[in-house]
Each structure stands twice: as C-alpha cells, then as structure tokens.
Amino acid sequence: MKDNHFVLRGSFVHTPTKDELVYKEDAYLVCEEGRCAGLFDALPERYALLPIQDYSDCIIIPGLCDVHMHASQYANKGIGKFITVGWDWFTKLTWPEESRYGNPDYAERAYQKLVEDLVRSATTRSVMFATIHREATELLMKMLDKAGQGAFVGKVITDHSSISELLESTGQALSETRQWLENTMGRYRNVKPILTPRFIPSCTKEILADLGQLVREFGLPLQSHLSEDYHELRDWVQVRFPDAKTSGEVWDQFGLFGSQTPTVMAHCIFPPKGEMELMAKRNLMVAHCPSAGLTGHVAPIKRYLNAGIQVGLGTDMSGGTPTLNLLPEIPHMIQLSKHWWVANCQRYGGFETEKPLVLSAPEAFYIATKGGGAFFGKVGSFEAGYAFDAVVIDDASLRDINQRPVNQRLERILHSADERCVVAKYINARKVL
Ligand code: FE
Image 1: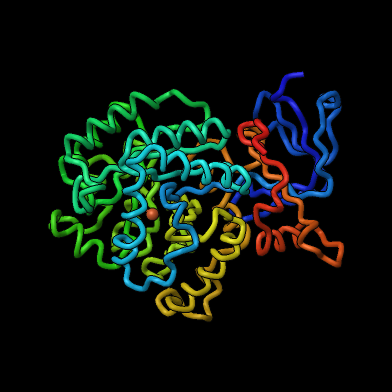
Image 2: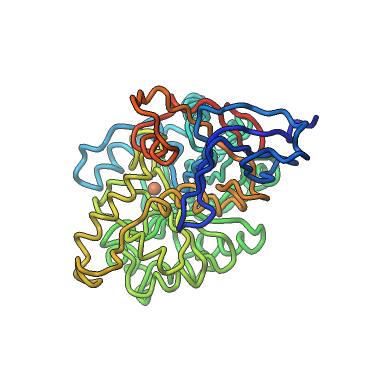
C-alpha cells in the first residue's frame, strides 16, 4: 500500500463555503494520491483495504493557515504589548531583533525554536516575512521544508527609511533578491519564495519597478502591508507619490497589486475611498490580523467579505498574537467584528438593521482555513481534490463534565485549546506530527 493512500476516522469539521460549518460525526476522510478523496459517513467498499488511522475520540479540522507572520520576531513573542507609542515598537523591539539575523548561528537557533513550535501547533501553512538577510532566509526555508510545514517565505526588501543594519542599497536589494530566488525557486516540496517588500514607505520607486520586473520574469506571488496606520497614506505614501489617492494605486502602477500575481496584504485596517474596489478588481487577499496591536483599530472584515474580497487570518507574530496558536483567533475575530460594528453601525443602517456587519462563526472558521488556504491553491477544506491537510485535536484535556455534540466541542476547542491538544497533523498527506 502506498504511503499516500490511507483513511482517517474521527469527527470532522470544515467549511466548503463561508456560509456553513459542516460537521461529520464519526466519519471517514480518505487520502488518495496524497489528496482528499472525500469525507464519508460510512467507508465506501472501494476503500475497504486502505489502512485506517483511528481518531474516533478526536475532532479533525483542516489545518489553519497563517497568512501573515514575521518569523524573525518569534523570539519577541509575548512581549511589547505594554508599548503604547507605535514607533517604540520598531526601535525597541522589532529592529534590534531583526538585526540579529545577519548572524547565521543566531538565525539557526532562533528559527529552530519557531519551526519546532510550528510543527506542534494547529497551523499547517504560513506566509512569512523573514529579514533582509539572504542566508538566514534560505536557512528558514530549508528548516521548514524538512519539517514538512507548508510555507511561502520572503526575504524582506528594504532600501528606504530603516536603520543602517536593516537597509540595503537598491542595487544590493535587487541582486540579493535575485540570488535568493536562484537558490530557492523550485528547490523545496513544501516551501516557496514570495516577494516581500516590507511596505511602500520602506521601498524606493526604483526597487518597486525592479520588483514589477521580477514578478513578470518569475511569476512570483507577493506579500506586504497595506493601510495599517491611519496616517500611512498622508504621511508616508503621498510624500513621495503625491498623485496617489490610495496606497493600492501605488502598488498597482508597478504591477504589484494582484494584476499579475497572487498578492496578500496584511491589515488593511483603513481602506481609503476607492481602495476596496481596486482590491476586489485585482483579486487581492487581505491578511486579517485580529491581535495586531500597533494601532488598536479593527479592520472592516465583513465589508471586505461582502465586497467579494478574499480574506485569510494572520498572527502578525509578534506584533499580534503572543503565541502561534490561531485557534482562539477564530472567536476573537467574531468578537472584534462586533466591536467594529458598535463603533461604526450608524454609517450602515444603525443597530436596527437586519444585516449587521458582524462575522458569523462559519465565516470566521472559513477565513482561518479555506479563506487563507486559497493562497496556497486548493487548501483548507476536506472537499475532494483538496490537499490532504488535517489537524487532529484531542479535547479530553478540556475536562468537559458533559457529553456534547461536535459543534459544541468545536466551540470549546476554539476558545480554550492550544498545541497541547494537537495530537497529530498531516500536511500534503505527510504525517508531520
Ligand atoms: Fe506585519
């Protein structure tokens, strides 16, 4: 029997659409040729000879996809939340830590902890910023691939407005990026490179034009930050691009806003007039980071969904979640959308409207799985043809005195489970945990 033909038995939850959570109690998920072949109430006769992994007591979900994290800031996890001035975050925490990755020995030790912890988490796929350092970025990609984690990883590009340790000349930024691509493209099974300009304020016009050329040449996806700060457009973008009405327009004029390549932008908290329309037109993905605390504001996620814009979930490690655990970010998303609604409802029909712009549970679960998974292809669902990613969660340690249906067990898991409850994990049909 081939390694990539097998069956998982357990209780399953997934969201084929954002409108419905599908629960299957005591069911069978078949892996055929490394992909999902279907979720069945009873195992069809044709699969009767396949080996069965029995997780009857557990809940199995498609892996969670973290579409925005800074791998190099994992060492800072859980600190910095007491900082109240945004700029201090960069000068006191982010930049000093990222500067250390010029030392490959430090990078290896720090990334080792990240990769080990990621394997134990419920996350199967990540879209990551590394740092400007090519060697350390390649090291991270190699380690992730060896562990079997799925990822897009980016060597960060910064040729404007940073400290000297994290600043490259435009020529260096381009040549190092090209070298990095030559070293990593097509090299790994689970890990791929992604172009990673930090954000418009840290990039010259010249490097943005060069990146447009790289996109055309290599067909690479791209990640960055967009509208994270209220004054980003006025104070940082329009200073150098005075005609731009939105930051998206600037990206777009260089062919870096989804027109030529899959693009994910983190935060998108303050979309100026016209930006959402352009994002929908360009099929852009929003990386929603509910715990990102730099501005303390909440992105209008339900409006993005209603506009037909793709949304995924991100930790924004370490400016966001204090751990890699994305499970509680699902109910957190719902709660924050309620806060956003309370603050903004007067502009959208008030409290009396029948359609409050609040996320539902299926929508939040979808964002964390199939929504972000779309950046990786057919990922984040148990539908036939999807990549065989599955996370097995044993909720016995949550100490429920009552027997409950799957939907209530899932709710408890999302609110209170962490990596200690993750007992097995499959990515691309490989058992990585
Ligand atoms: Fe970020």
